[in-house]
Each structure stands twice: as structure tokens, then as C-alpha cells.
Length: 447
Image (tube, rainbow, N blue to C red; front, side):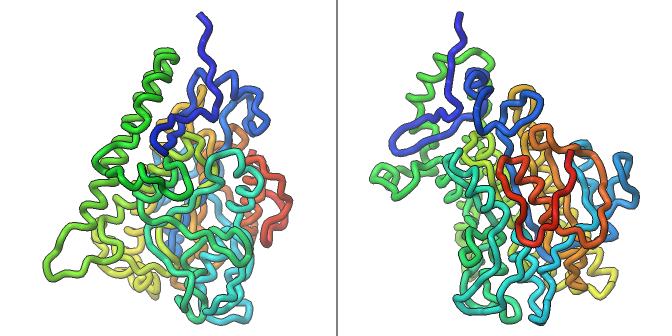
């Protein structure tokens, strides 16, 4: 019996909605000769890239491994990643020089976010004449974004503003965004999981009458594509049917969690003003990570950015015993109590990142995993937040880039190595032909 053939860009459709599919065995003939295939060793999966940003730097002695190479020992902060040590590299020595004042005075938090993916110095203004540079994710989106439904996906957990003064005369646009389409146009991030979900699986454009009338949380998106799904499954083999069922289960679970999160946020609290970002921060972060996994799994996009907080975020983290504002205690002046609390926050962020890597690694793709076929940067635009240090940044790169990235090491680089050197190397692996981004001075050897 001849195995059915499905194009990679197969969607389930119904009533104004579309939903992408994970990689199936039935798609292998279509994947093998694809011209946008950037994989190595006959791996047909596309390469995905994500850039995760956390605010206020880190306690670097607790972050940095004491030894280097493939036999290094994980540091205190990175212990939650112990199950994934073979899947990532820790880098020491990377810097974003353009985050420094260069005569502009205070404003290191605004500069650390705006330079994180651009490597360009922001023009100091609280007005509309903002200017910094094009971010690496948008450089990639310009060249390979047309291969997917969404050129890129921008997510966060804190709403931001693109106007007003947020940091010592710097526009809030600099603190609220790491993704910049042009030097003067930030890519606003989505902070509501429901809206991000609809952006991924909706038909796009203005909502039609059917979409406006449907109750998102009373009827699963899968119900709208049920007929198409049933017809598809008749054509698939047993392995692909199992993959589809597992995928649908994850979609329904995510819908349920989004519904629960929104219900919790809207819950009535007498005589209490519900804060703008009500709800558990851990839940918010994990929902967004799950959305990135789904976006990559269905090839809805291959490029994502995620801000775990705006630059200078003063959120608290009671789930790990820290009720103080993050930014407030980042100016710790070596007070042990504050340093201890910051280590707790640093480790909390890493624990959520470990959750993300676990989700990526659990998705099988033609003999490899979604994590194997990705490159995920996790880091901050500040090293020591107390000193507003823009060198010695806490950065790691997870995933093998389709077999082109050698992982499992702590790599010590020369001091002041531009972070954008890493980004230029990643762009090449992802299929974007770019020789320079921001202040890059070359490429890092990743293989």
C-alpha cells in the first residue's frame, strides 16, 4: 500500500480558523528536497530560533560555572538545567558595548533591552524620535519569514508603552521591546496568552462574524476544524494518527490553561483593584513557552522573542519567597539578604527555561527532536545588575540548530566579545545570509 503524501504546509481549516500540523511521516517526501531546508546530515526539519530576555542581570558568581569545556560543572543558578546539560552551551565573555552610556548618562536598563538583539546604541529621547537598530530576529524574519504563516512571534509577560519616559530620559519603547523591525519601529509584544493563541491559529486579519460570535473558552478551536481533521486522519498511518492525537491533546490542554488563567485574572476581589498583570507569574511564563513550542511544532513561525519582564522590571516573586521588587533589590550593594533573594529569582527564571527545554525535547521530528532543530538564546542585556555591567553577560544557547551546533560545554571567550557575533552565526545556520548585525565583528564557531 502506498503511503499517503502530505505537503509540509498542510492546515486544518474551518469557520475562519486555520491550525497547523506537526511534522508527520506522511510529509517526509515533501520535506526531503525542500529548498528552505537548513538542516544537516539529512535532517529534513527546518531550524527555529528564539531569543529569551530576562531583566536586571544576574548574580554572576552564582551563574558562572567555575570550570570550562565539556566537563564543566553546572553553577548554582543553572542547576535546574541539569537534565539538559548536553543540549546547551554556556557562554562567558559576551558583551553589548552599545548598552554603555557613551556620554548619554543614566539609563542602563533601557539601553540593556534595546541593545540586546540590535547591538546598536539607542538615541536618548523620551519623545517620538526613537531610534536604535534592527534586531536579529527581524533580520531573520526579513529573509526567511515568508516561509511560514507568521514571519515572527513576539511575546512577553508585562505590558509596555512606546511613549513616555521610563528610564532617565529614555523612551518607554526602549525598555518595553527587544524586537525592532526597523531602527525606529519596535515590534510590540503580545502579553495575553489568549490573543497570542488566536494570532497563531486564527485566519489572520479582521475577525469575521463567525469568529466574533464564537465563545473561545466554551468551544475548542479543534471543534471548528473537526470535519477536516476527521477526513485527514482517514488518510494517515497509525504512527501519524497517534502524533495528531498527542498534538490535539496538547492544544486542548493549553486552551484549558489559558481559560483558567484568564478566569483567575478576572476573578472579583471586593475593595481591591486587580493589578494589570494579575495572576501567577510562573503560570504566565509557562503558557507563553507552550505557545512558542506549538508555533514551532506546527511551523507557524520559525522566529520568536520572549521578554520575561520589561527592562528594570520591579515585579515580585512570592512563589519563591521574594516579595520585594526585582529592580529594587538588584541594587543590592552586596547586602547578603538582597543577593540571596536575587539568586532565588535568577534560579526561578532558569527553572522555567528548563520547563521550556523539556517541552521542546518531548516533540519528536523525523528521528530528532524540536529542541535538536532549534537554537534558543537565553540571557540578559546586563551582567551584574548592581553595577549596570554590559559585559560578562549571562548567556546560554540551547539546541543543536539541526545538527550544526555542538552543545554541552561552558565556553569562555575573550572579554568584550560582541554578543552579536553569536547572532550572526545563528543567522547563517537559520538560512539568513547576513555578514554583520549591529556591532558584530565576526562569527562565533558553533560547530
